[in-house]
Length: 206
Image (cartoon, rainbow, N blue to C red; front, side, top):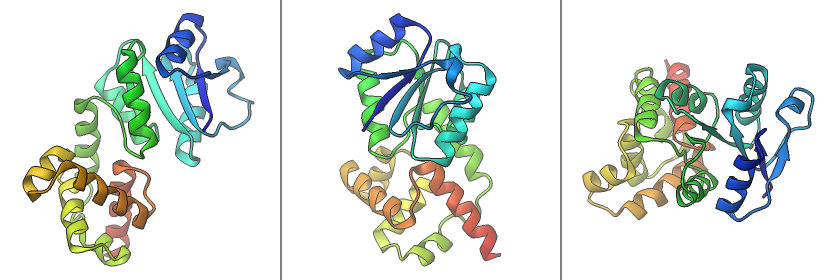
């Protein structure tokens, strides 16, 4: 998998490269408008991008398999909610510690979303308000098992894997395994896409 970084500052590019212990293919923010599409993981320094560059990256993340991690000097819940809703897979601080940056990449590569709890809960709450009922159509359409349906119901309630595990009296690892199976069966790439899929399924079922 290729690793890219969209950044104008050498010190930030070097910081990210050292943290991940990988050579990042550096993309000039000014070349985004007419440059080729990227495939792989892209770390983008949001503060160095003009609006047009941000829009192109978000469109690419939404339309392709680009795993976009938005990093900003001053994270805000509203901004995080917006970029995650529009296709980014990660949102955090530009100067996050090396261990947390590695964790962010690991989570995103595994098909989940990485952001602060306030951002994720805000995204999920906003989306879940539009889904009612949230699970029945997906369970029937994709042939989910009884346990997968239970895990899906917890996801649609907006809870974390840890809380879902406690409620269902199973391990967190088992919840993650069921979530992987649900994503595979439905074709959704992450929780946000799963909720949007449920929303469309319910609207079509009416």
